Image 1 (cartoon, rainbow, N blue to C red):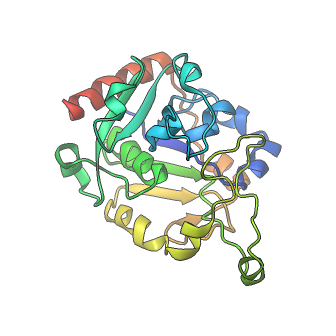
Image 2 (cartoon, helix red, strand yellow):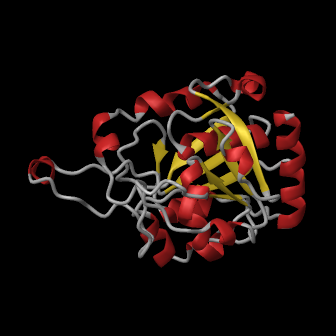
Length: 244
């Protein structure tokens, strides 16, 4: 049951190309982690999130869709336990795991899964662990979108997500991507010599991993599929063991 391949779907606009090429059919019954609102657009093994306000927003100063009741209907959700606030509001279908600002490899089970400030990092850490530190990861929508100098000077906003009609705190929010070097966040995963990570966007600003297009990804995908409920049971058992 241990998977040897995981597809992680972020929110970057480049996912539009995959959708136009039949991405949904290519990843049917695969081990798929959907980040944040990607769960609305793709069948997935589980939803992964970081911010408690994404899950249930009680802060009038932060803009998030009201999805709390909808989340109750999903088969499996995995989130970051940044503080005890999140444990008070989670549904029975949700696991929250401790996090760490450093990647600790196999020691991360005791010290927390690497997250930095991004669910995209957290999900990679979880994927590596669930594959027993050996396998292939395909990153979709990991664009690290930035504005041009002209757009910055004109204080323009750009559309950085593939999903339409969902307004949230991260919509058109590029400041953090423009101020931070992604290599500093992603390079830690290079220490895993038996993990191969592909960034499925030739134009991504994340340069840490080999970049490929969707056609190449479809060629590289294994033929292995999973009965999703059985895979979820395996995941729950393994993650509950690590968080106990």
